[in-house]
Structures are given as C-alpha cells and as structure tokens.
Image (cartoon, rainbow, N blue to C red; front, side, top):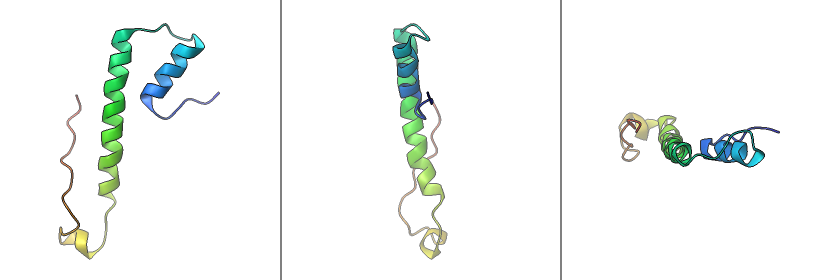
Length: 69
C-alpha cells in the first residue's frame, strides 16, 4: 500500500486502516496542512516562468510568498 501524496488523504488512510485513532484536533491540523500544501503547489507553478515576458515582469501578477499558518 502506498501513502497518498496529500497530507489529509494520508491521515484519513491511516485512520481508515486502524493504524491511528481518529482525533478531531489532528484532523483539523491536517486540514490546515492540506490548505498550505494546495497553496504551495499553486505558488510553485509560478516560479518556473521563463521567457522575455517573465524577465520584464509582464507575465502577470505573482502570488505573495506564503507565510505558513
């Protein structure tokens, strides 16, 4: 069995398999980690922009760096 790449899915798989007990506080923490993960994926996609438009900063507005939670 492989572990899902997303934090919330991995947590829910562990709970579902009985490896760990459900905990509402841990569930909320995993939801926050999932939100951070989703934001970083979006943020990371803008970092690979290249070309003359990106060098002249004409390729659109960049997202501000995320500061965690």
